[in-house]
Image (cartoon, rainbow, N blue to C red):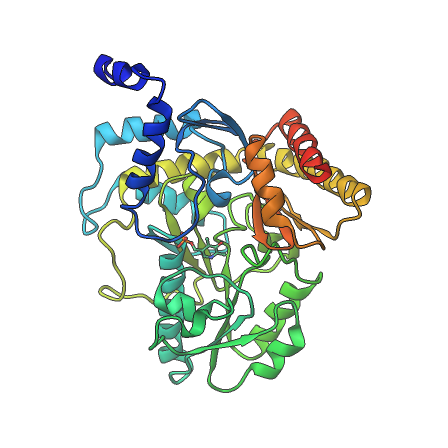
Length: 409
Ligand SMILES: *Cc1c(COP(=O)(O)O)cnc(C)c1O
């Protein structure tokens, strides 16, 4: 801010009053997508975020489970700085070192043979569906029906809106892409009953994130893997929200020791920058030149960040830290649920939900915001918690204390 701006801000007692309408007018230049609080966020560090007026927020949203290492972590700042000086983008038709190294990091010693990088989770899921459809053309006489689940969230492209099971989404922008059949989540018999000779794949989230952290019954993924093998149907897991350490394992499917044929990653892999990926096992890899692309796919700037994030999460002891904070968060939420006679506490790793049977989640989150705490009302009756994977003991404790105040009010 230069001297002149400072002078104009402090020149009159009315300066605050004149700044507010100016902000509102600025915000009107953005197309409407969601109701945002008036505060403008300026700076972040670790588990904290500050707005332009200097108010500090304890952040248990973290960019929507995106900032896996917290705000402005040294690893990412360093990767961005060094890589931006070196090479930002050569062209998707030329190799770059960070993309090659990140691909190696994600596939070496893993069940996955190949990866394709994208810029968003929706795009990664689109690529997953394209890959599956191509595989179906080659191996299942063109079967193309994909079974997905009610209340699923796979992103906001037209096809992913069709694939998602959010009420109303299938009709919002007709005509919508076809080829998706929806069944209840967590019900293996419903999937068994929906499989026909036109079925190509089953696609779902290991834990439904946007639906309010819905955890399927134990054994669901294992049974699903057996069922899909039996019918020669692909298993596509959308790990955009659950992947890269969020649930206390590198991938959520590892809790049940299953391997999907295709997996999408997003959110946490970029630690805050737009990076996503689709991975596939040898069995499902079938893209040939010309089948898929994208101007920014695998650009070295984002790939360098992804590499720093994945290396950090894979380092010895990191996931044990996530699980230790899970124990604390879970115990604290259960205590609050008991104290205030609330509903279920569910989740895994550092993706948790607390059910509010009174349906006042939006009100509780508004109250929390005013007290400097960011939590998300995933549904009118559900609070969701998705802190940095490096959240500290004191920060979890402070969040629980602040939440207690909000529930009491
Ligand atoms: C957020 C999310 C997506 C969409 O990712 P974008 O980067 O917003 O396109 C897809 N699937 C799941 C499970 C998600 O949580």
